[in-house]
Amino acid sequence: MQLPGAQLNNHLQKGLKSLYTVHGDEPLLVQEAADAIRATARAQGFTERTSHTVSGAHFDWSEVLAAGGSLSLFADKQIVELRIPSGKPGKEGSPAIQQLAESSQGNDSTLTLVILPKLDKMTRTGAWFTALENCGVTVQVDPVERAALPAWIAQRLQAQGQRVLAGEIGQRTLAFFADRVEGNLLAAFQEIQKLGLLYPQGELSFEQVESAVLNVARYDVFKLSEAVLGGQVARVQRMLDGLEAEGEAAVLVHYTLSEDIRSLKRVKDAMQAGRPLPMALREQRVWGVKERLFERVLPRLSEVALSNLLHSAHQVDGIVKGIKQKDWPADAWQSLHRLAMQLCQACAVPARG
Image 1: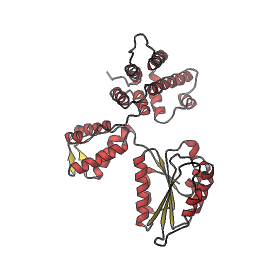
Image 2: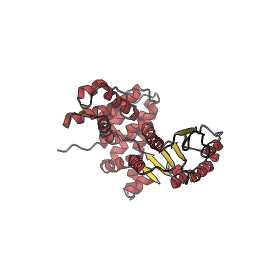
Image 3: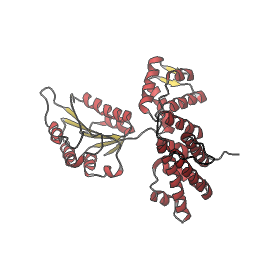
């Protein structure tokens, strides 16, 4: 059974299953999902807990399989946790997990909790994960996207009895908060808790939030790609400054920008050859958030604009490798700023007259 992370609490209120699998790449939300399952289990008498972490090829799977059948003298119900940080159980692990999943059926004395990172499509169709899905509940924990972050912050503040001012000031406060913790949900959670300690329940002013929230943004080069394709000029400039300050490799930033340009050009060429846009996107392996961004910007991008962007990307490729280019800054990061702005402005929604 598949279950979105947002529906877990409602599910737990209706009854506890004997096998849960939590997977996702946002540590805070994965931890909270696992905590919710543990808390519900403890309330129902699961007083003992053992934890096992798959650390390599020599992991002893027999230990996990035996754990489900061994209760101490002081507990009649137990939680058996299995963590696989790599998401790859290995040759011996796959049949062991299938056996673990099958043995969980009808076992009211043991709750098995499997914790995994974000999994690709191929892994989710593997025999061991399919067994977990068929025999229990798999909870997929999705990250909070940038656009949804202000609302997420407001919801968390409300849960501790606090709220920002209504109207435009409140929206500005939440936007400021989101900018400062961009890409780092755990930091956002910690800053929200800090506000709960510093100020009483009720309304928070912009000045109170500003003075309390640290600049703890974790800038992500792949989030930069989304911001550029979204035409978000100010955000792109801020993220580039953050990536440079954090010591990100200029060559990686250039690769991300130039790969977006090449992908746009390949999809555009396919469309010119008569391919429908959805088919061209699939053929170029463009999906998810980026697929929606491509669908929005491609109709506005001309062949000339894409050719100019490709030429600029080629120029900057030389600069980040130490080769000076005519009419371009010698500094790699200044050149990356110019390239990003060219692409960003080409993708931006034209202002209405």
